[in-house]
Length: 123
Image (tube, rainbow, N blue to C red; front, top):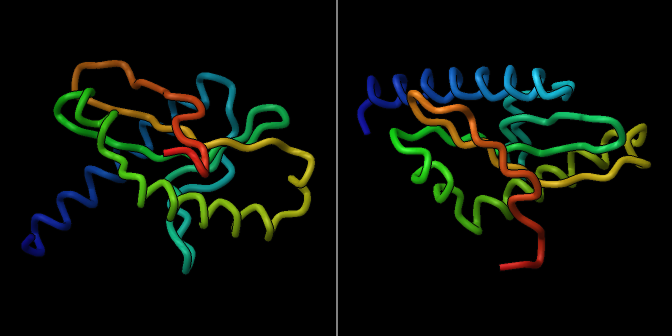
């Protein structure tokens, strides 16, 4: 991928994450962090609703079905490692539950929020 293509993909990714964050806020979530980069992995969005922390992967594709299938098992495992590191650094959330969600975006479609999209240890 050329530099200009990477830059365009980065811009599209940021726009998708902003759209997903807005969607979550409309659904009553608070955004705690965005674009979290840790040595063990990355998390697109960290959101809280009540006593629940959601680690959210955002995927945007031309077709929503493609976005829904775009996260690999290896990606979820990296997200899980990052989530564990993020939570361990924030003891104030020790009494909160947590899960892994996916938000799939496509042009002309409402965002699709898949709650509990993946669980560690399940294939």
